[in-house]
Length: 62
Image (cartoon, rainbow, N blue to C red; front, side, top):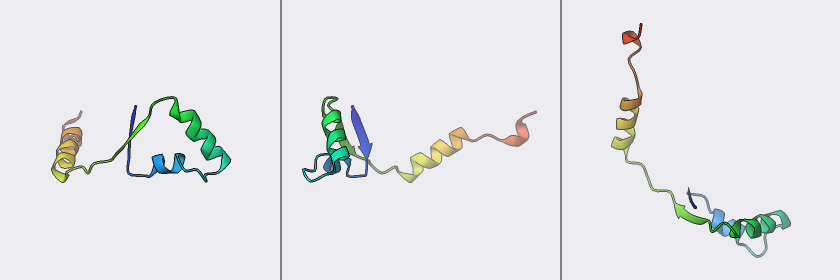
């Protein structure tokens, strides 16, 4: 499983000096083989195209 985020989750969970609960979560999550990937930026045109595709004209509905 790959977690896409722009937050430093991997670093926080693997810190040696983390609190007890964070260390426990880090150990529990290692068995699932989670990989962390940085979130890429969304280009403005793709977002605009998506908004146009998902929008509808209220005047044409009965």
